[in-house]
Length: 86
Image 1 (cartoon, helix red, strand yellow):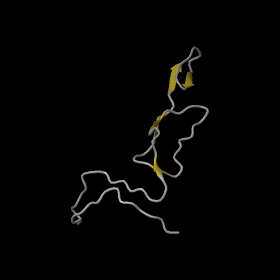
Image 2 (cartoon, one colour):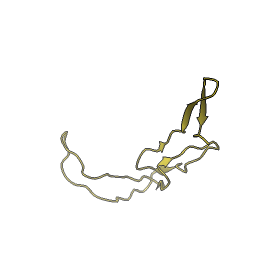
Image 3 (cartoon, one colour):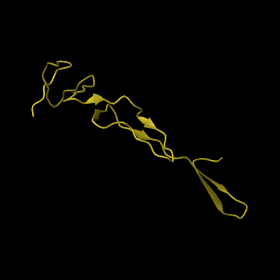
Image 4 (cartoon, one colour):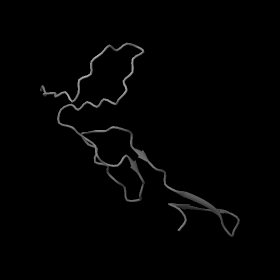
């Protein structure tokens, strides 16, 4: 099924192997909208859903690591705290 496409901007000029664009060009096709949520996420133990379905994204999503701490314990071993020391 054909869809109507509307130009958001028109770029003219000559492009060859040495050409580069000085700005980001985003093209929306069909009925998709841009993603407006967070692009950096802190993990949790319940899980999360980023509402990205059928959205155009301008960048990668970064998921921060879960904090892990390791300390010595009285028996000579190591105790690991997942999520940080409480």
